[in-house]
Length: 441
Image (cartoon, rainbow, N blue to C red; front, side):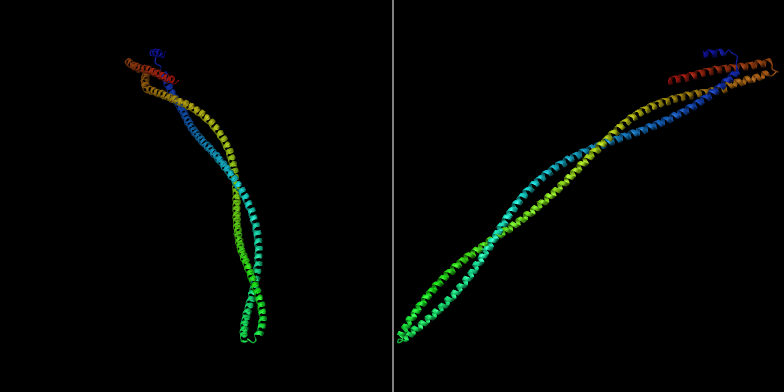
């Protein structure tokens, strides 16, 4: 229909003010198109800034997501480490319980050994008391034997003194007997010399013989007594020897018993030391057991506290994991929203770019139209205005009028041709912009 109108207008009379108005409208549209382009550029800048902010927010959220994922990984590692520590502590507690059971068993063994040692020590104390009693009895017997020995020694000394006295008396009597024998020999010699005095001498000799017999009898009796005393002395000497042997044997027995008593005392002292050592070891073992029990209680308390802390940390980790899952979901939702917004923004940006390109093409077309209008329209209009100024003059001939009319026809034909070209160009430009906008829609 527009082309038909254009064709009908070609036969209409030329309306120069309408052409000028159309040129003004094109300038107005050009200005309006420039404003719209500036507005679209501003909107494009705003959307680009929003896209940059959205990209920054998306990058920040990605960083936050990575941080939370790293925190979740660290939390999982810490939880795994804590679980491993818990298992280690449980294993240590099991080992400590086994060690404590072993120590209790060792303690029971040591207690049994100590009981046996105490029983042995009590038995040894009784044996020691028995040996001490036997030693006291042996000492008493030895003291009694020493007293008897001293008595026998005193008696032996007295017997030796008596025997010595008897030997001296015997020697005295022997010397008297020798003297008597000498006197008897002298008397016999005197008897021989004094034959005359034989009767007297015989009498005296008889008397002396009697005396001699008496003395011999006394000497025999003295010899018998001396023999008896010698026998008694020998008996006493034998008894003294036996007593000395018994005393030596008793001394040996006493020494043996003293050695036994010394050994018993040494053994008893050694047993006392062993008892003290075992008692000290038992005290040390008891202290160690008390210390180990305290350590076990401490470890048990630490394990309980560690289990409580681990449960609390597990709950905290579960809470953080739940929060992290929720945060991840929110972050995923935000990422989806950001992606949607980014897609919308990219779509809007692409549409804006297409609209901007269309607007630029439209503006370029309008500028071209203005350029064409300012050059191709202005020249014929100027020619028509000049011709009209000539027609207003009075002194114009018919030939000049025909010539001016010819110029006017040429200008009108130029304007008509330009009007058609301009109408076709505007139609094509509008159609092109509509097609692009329709493609964008």
